[in-house]
Every structure is written in structure tokens, then in C-alpha cells.
Length: 153
Length: 294
Image (cartoon, rainbow over all chains, first blue to last red):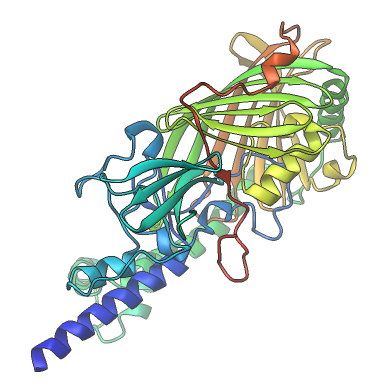
């Protein structure tokens, strides 16, 4: 009993730490490292409000950890360590590791989808169907990501 | 010496050292023990160091230390802007470097190539090739399409009536920073030059065999430099932008090759999807207050 409480505590700390670091606003850069920003490419913008410089960091909390921005080049394969492909949201990953299964949350965003998904076209738009979970590919700023959506049909 | 003095402040429970060798010992042992204090010490050093650097700069320039705006530098910038506004169509290729800042402040440089074809006022085609992406942007005055050539996804949205407005919308609404947008902004707004707090003419400098004049500017949040071609075609040949907002000071650079007489037809700006390309959506910029993706 005591032990399970310990495990739970560690998990809770892990989860909150992950969330905190995510809120600090790291995106995952080209090499799979969390980045806090990037150089501006224009001098004719307003730099007073910081939005430009922070543009690359305003990512959703759910897509900061273990995501893969190499979709374009590597076809969604795991470019850096950790094997291929499926990197669900960080907090969910911690929970899933303890076999408390959670379905992918609608609205969460990942950079790659599981290998078993099927490409489906609905109303002219592409989706990835992975069992009962549907991912909608999207261009989001400079990245191509997948957002979990309700079944489109 | 400042290093040691600074350090002692943060290691108050260490016995104070009497000679330099002992100080050194203290420094290293405490370094092992107090991993957390180290960044603070370094930060402290930086704050100590920067005024000194400033003083050096002052003395090397003599007594005058106020930011100076060389009117000739502003004139050159405005001349370039005016000239850019006269161009009806052009193709420019750019070698781009861009720094990302890792969470711990380390700088990582990425390179990419840009091929931009513009026919003003309402046609634009941009190809960006980097290690991880191959993106094409099409704007024909009606629609704006993003095509990820490697993933073979594309997204098309209705577009505003001019390149300038498109640049704005891509950035504000979709979070897409089209490259080289300054080429469309210089010379459009006289107020832009008013932001410049310091302007220096560095002197002649050659970019890819072309003689230019190099200028350095400072304004809120950025230091930047530009190399403007000398002669009757005052084109920007290179520019470098350094952010001052992040203490790591990431830098961006573009080196440009110009073609002022590109051959093209209107189809160049229209995206004709390959049969196997799949259409997806273009996500709107995050709602910053909730962090929710629209």
C-alpha cells in the first residue's frame, strides 16, 4: 500500500513537472530538443510585445514531449532515439506506463501517429484512423501535426 | 577577482579563503556541491561583465557614447526601400541560417534555402527547403496554399488581395512566417525607420563578388545589419538579424541572389495538386489566452 502511494506520488510529480516544463513553452526543435525560441527573420515587426520571438514556443501543452518534428523528411519515423512513431501526450504517457489506459483526448496534438493507422479521406480531407481514434493532419505554423478529433463520419 | 568575490556571496557558509590557492580550492569543491549556485554565479558574472564591455566600447569611441543615427545610413536604407518598391516582379534566392535556442540557452544553427518569386501586387510563390522540410507556398491573388512536398499534404485557404496583406494574415492568423518578408515592407512605411535608435555605416563589403555598403542598426529588440549593393541597383544582398530579447541572442541571416527579369506565367502561382497529394487543414494560430488550438 505504502509502495503504491510512493509510485503514485512519483507519477504525480513527473506529470506536474512535465506540465510545468511544457508551460514554460518549449517546442521541439529540429534535432528533437526542446527549444525556447528562435531568431526573428524580419526587422519590420513589432518586437515590443515579444510575440514574434515567442512565436515558436506557443505550442499546446500536449505536444511538447517526445514529439517528432521530422515528419516531413522521415515520414513520421523516430529520428532521434526512442523507437518509432507513437509519442502520445506527455502526461498520458506517464499514465499509460502504469497500465491505466486512457484514450487519446480529442484536441490533443501529436507530431506523428501510430504505425497501424489507416489513411482515410472524408469530405475531401485526409485523416488517419487508428482504431477508434481519429487524427486530423494539419499545418500548424511551421509544423505539420496531427490533432485528435471526433470521428468525422 | 570579481569571480571570487561574487562567488563568496553565494557560498556564505564556506569558510572565507585567505589566499588565492585556497580560494581556488573552495571554488572547485563548491562547484561540485552547489550545482544550483553555479548558474547564479555565471549570471552574476555576466551582469558584472557587461558594463565593462560597455565601458570599453565607450573609450574606444572617445567621449561620445550616445546612440548615433548616421543620416546617410538611414538615407541608404530608404533609398533601397524606394527602389524595392519600383520592382514589379523579381525572383530572389536566399541562403538562410537561423538559430534556435535550446531550453538551456545553447544555440543551434539551422540552414535552409529559399526561392521566392513575386509578381506584385498579388502573386507570390515561395519554396523553402531545409533539412527536415520542403514547403511550397502559392498565392495567386485568390487562394493561399501550403504544400508539404515530402509529406505530400496541402492546405488551401482563401487569401487577401495583396502580398502585403497575405504576409500579415499568414503570420497573424496561421502563425506562418513567410521568409524574406522585409523585402515587401521596406519602403512602405516611413515610420519603420523611426524605430532605429542607432545607425552606423560600416563601410564597403563584398557579398558574392558584389560590392556593397554594410550598415548596422539597432532598434527595440534587435540589432541588425544589411549589405546594400552599390551603384544604380541598391538591392539588399545580405542581412543579419540578432535578437536581443532572448539572452542567448539568436541570429538569423539571409544572403540573397537576385533575378530582376524572371520568366514565368500565371500558372507559376497556382497550386495544381499532384494526384496523390492529400488535402488537410491549415490550423489557425493558438488562442493565446487559453492555449487551445482552434
